[in-house]
Image 1 (cartoon, one colour):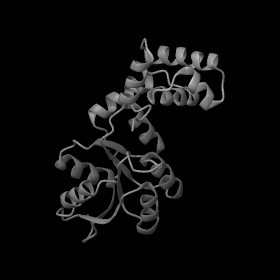
Image 2: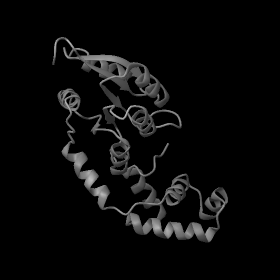
Image 3: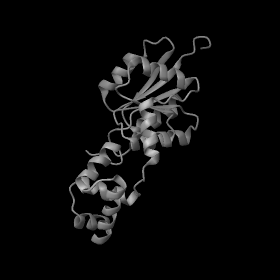
Image 4: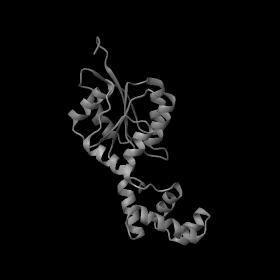
Amino acid sequence: MKGNQRIRILVVDDHPAVRKGLVATLEPESDFEVVGAAASAHEAVELQRQLRPDITLMDLALEGATSGVDAIQQIRKEAPGAKIIVFSALRGDEDIYRALHSGAVTYLSKGTPDEELVHTIREVHAGGRPIPPDVARKLADRLTQTTLSPREVEVLKHVAEGLRNKEIAAVLHISEETVQGHMKNILAKLGVNDRTRAAIVAAQRGIIHLN
């Protein structure tokens, strides 16, 4: 690194303890400087705009209606060169795909050892795109899967909430027969035999998120 220039890092996580932990992990590194910490997607976009960090560590499961993926998309729209590393407890193949497709450089789980996190930040700052083996496997799996349509995802979210076909039809202003057709497609695409299993598999993969 030239002179005393340090890698400027923005931390984004809605849990205060996680933010403090990340700062405590990163600040002791002589070539790192944590320039800000955000608790929401809105804060992340604002601080990215103000601070222009070299690296942003982004959680996906943020409080409120706006997710980490939304923040990534907004940041990359305003700053196409922004380097964003996802650091999240979400590990579904759909979560990984959405984050990388939105412009994140790489994806780390919150179980990642501190040394690997530090190494990844340096590698991304240097222009690398390191993808952990488990993330690469899940991404490859996702690319071979038949994707659900936006409407099918909507139906599945309501299934996970416990709604019956008739109730889903009323909420979405479609016929009960149409809901039944969507359910048939959902079961086939997810390779399951019943609606409960469909909701479980979808949640595991990150297609839907349960509260």
